[in-house]
Figure 1 (cartoon, rainbow, N blue to C red):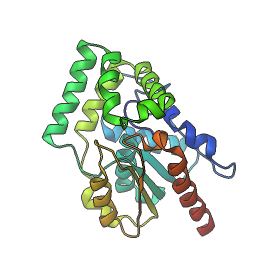
Figure 2 (cartoon, one colour):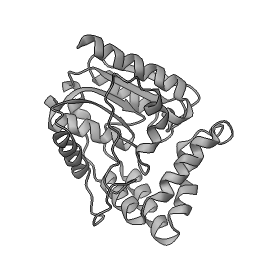
Figure 3 (cartoon, one colour):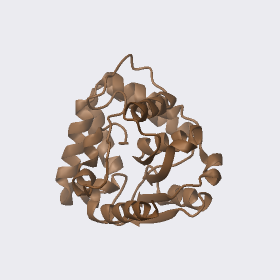
Figure 4 (cartoon, rainbow, N blue to C red):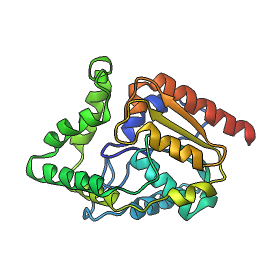
Length: 243
C-alpha cells in the first residue's frame, strides 16, 4: 500500500524485483492513481474497508501487508481491526502515533495550498520534505516519478486524504499485541517519520525486525531500492520457509 499522495507506481522497483513465486497486489488507495476519487470525504477507516473488500474480492483470507507511510497507517489499523487477516507486516517509513496538533496544522496547510495554488505548487513544496537532498542529484528519476504521481491526482483526492490522515486513530497501544512477523524499515534521513518513531514501534512489537536504510529519507524504497529490496526479499523468503 502506497504513501500519500502517490499511487501503486511508487512500488515499481519492488514489483520488478519480486520473484515469480510471490503473488503481489499493489492497489491504488481511494482517491489516488486509477481509483475513483468519489466525493472526497474520506476516513482512514474507509481505506481499511477498501483493503478488506479487495481481499474478499480476490478470495484472500489473509495476506502479508506492506505499507509505506500512509500505507503503514492502513496496515496497522487493519491488523488492529481484524488481526486474523494479517499474516505478517512490513512497515516502512511510518509510525503508530496519531497526528499531533502541529502535524494536523500541516495537513490543513496542504489542503490550503492545493485549493489556492494548485497540485503542482503543493508537489514542489512536498518533494523536499520526502527526499534526501542528494536524491535530487543521485535519484532524479525517483523524484520525477513522485512529482508525476502527485500531479496526476486530483485536488479533491489529495485534500480529502490529508484530512483523513490528520484524523486517524492512534494504534500505539495495540503494538504489543502484534503476534505476526514484522519488518520495520526506515530511511536514515527521514524527517516525517524519523528513525526514532520506527525504533519506538520496534521496541513495542514483539520479535520485530528493524533496519535503517542508508542514504534515504522518507521514500526509502525509491532512494535506496537495492538495500530496501534486500531486506524485504529476505523477510518474505523467511515467511515462505515458515509456511
